[in-house]
Image 1 (tube, one colour):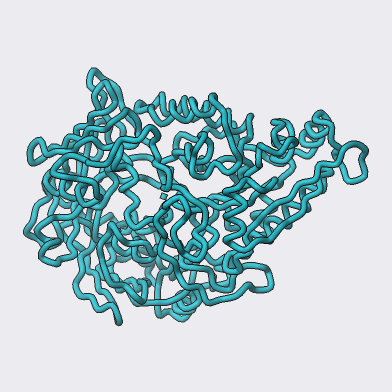
Image 2 (cartoon, one colour):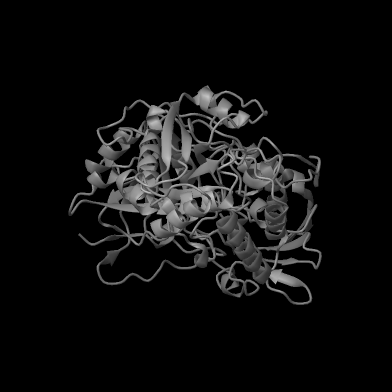
Length: 593
């Protein structure tokens, strides 16, 4: 899991892990049964799904694309609308599910040797690129891996670091969109134009973007080599055992010669029929797609700027489908016309305690603060319901998440822990007063965080803790984080599908702002990262979650949610997740009106 920056000025995964079945040669695939389910559909293009009563094939789908769309390179796309659009054309070698689970896609099965370092991938057969003449081969997988960066031939040149995440791959919000002092590459920014509404929500939020121009490159230093064994087989060798291999293999697959010819041609369910960045892109169904012919024959993408323009376009039927991060998306639900579907993002908000503070260095005090916070109330009142409670940076919908470590508000426990530490447990109580400052960025385009800080202050008053909220400009906020000049900090992180939390908790981690230095937590992180068998992955992540819950190096709050606003006639939208809302588009259809 990577954070490319704390999202104070961020304009726009995704969390997952390897499942591996053991035999003499360890074997894994999308359905964890050596690819059997996937192979059933690999011999030829599957027919459309059988439609039931009230369903019909046909109908055009009008969606949004960025107004300034230039490059259609799937590796460099950052705007969420463009990432989603290109997912209709390009497919990954290995797909990461909404639950963070590696699944077969263009790679239909894989094996890993006993060292956990060498993976052998079988390429799906009878798959064609959308030019209609070019078959998919192992050469395309190796070529696409090379485009991620760091390759000379089949060897990755990047040095092998001691840690899975080189410093600089995780960082806080980029003030003014400039480079961070630690050398982090800047993330492209949107240009928000709105202002906070009466509820404290932004009238128009920034366009949410997938961070970093090439998010797959984070694994380069862990890849020793990738090579074509034969036309249907690829061998990947990692520098260390663990789960990163499958996340690296989630890159979009391209064909070298089609790309050099200037063609935007993938293997996905749709192909480009025409494209004019100023007017529209027209996609038509790929009749020969291996996954089954889509029910919707044509998708038209219209250029749009800003959330308000997109939402107005869908409410007036100019568009049929948009995604948005605004908190007030629910008001665009119109009976008989539009529906609103919320989905989880990879944005995680938390309180970071400075462990250098004598009071916050006491585990019981941190536990008390965590128990005193009512996350569901924050989500309801501040986020207008657009969040999922989370007390740690491991997503509650991650397939290896252990639900027994969920934590709800418990004021009785919070008060007992504070009293045990020698502090009063109510505003009228006796004893030492726990007084803390809470720093928060005053970014007006993401103003809800200031409101969240104020709500947290009020909740902590219930257990006798006095909190002073300090609203800081972005540069001062970042400087205070780096200098560890704070008691509590409200931070937001974009977390990748791959749940690597080392950058937050390991000594020297690029976002270890609280000064966590625990050999036990570090060992648990390394054990979770080094696992490559399903049973080990689940056991090791359960142990890590136990430690994060008991030691409370960080007080998690929630994962934020975005919304789909679309035509009420559009049906069968399943398991959407940030950046992959069209993952099952071939099953979508329009209800008969």
